Amino acid sequence: MRLCRFFVVVAVLAGCGVSKPSQNELEMVLLQQELRFSAVIDKIEKYRTENGHYPSDLQAVSDVAFTSVDLPAQFKTLRTAPAHYEVARDRSFFRVTYGISDAEDYELHASSSYLSFENRWNIGHHVERFPHVEAKYFGARYQQGHSSESLSLTITSLLEAATANSAYPCRNLWADWIEKALGAGAPQHLGSPSLPVVGETKFYTTRDNKAAYAVVIDRKIFSPMKTPLPFVVGIFEWRLENTAWAVVQRCDSSS
Image (tube, rainbow, N blue to C red):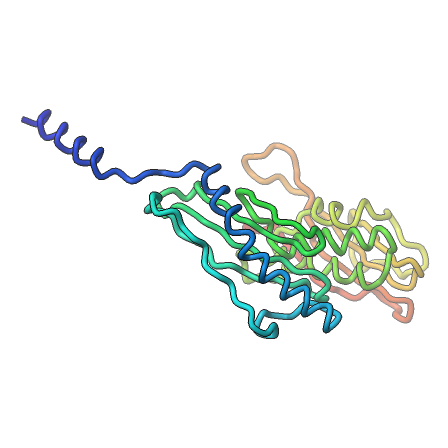
């Protein structure tokens, strides 16, 4: 009797089963939407041409609105992630992202994102948090020209990235984030006063040598790892007119 019931259940499920998409099929759905979303990109670029910078939000752009993602009828479990506009803190570039996911499988999702300085759409499984995108962008500018503005923007972006999932202002700021954005730095900075802390330090200076940031690093073993990981414990700023280093932010690596 139990065996009969089992076959009945299987037969019912087979008859009304829901088709599951593949990762490739999800990405193809997003690819088919690009032309519609690119119309929004054109209006944002027009705003920049007329104003010299990108809008702080899309409410400033006349006659612009995100359309919804068209979902294939055969995939009943698909859901959309609302289209999202993000602009750099100096309004020099922006990103638009929209996505699609399976309500019954958290690993099945895809996103399409447009970065204005790349001038193209990218489709993939994950989208990098925007403060990290900013840090790499401004950091690349700093490494090219060592300007004070680029250095300050990079540090601010990195500190925002370190607030993820935490109310604490700087938690788990890893040393490799700093190096990926700003480069290796210098082991010392001549002409500035002594730092108020002792430890491994990386110095990043401006091209005119009138300002510098000091990134103080500690190392700790995080279970189950066997080797210590370097993390930032504090960032300090010095400018030529100052007689001491100023604390920008102290950080920790607690969970």
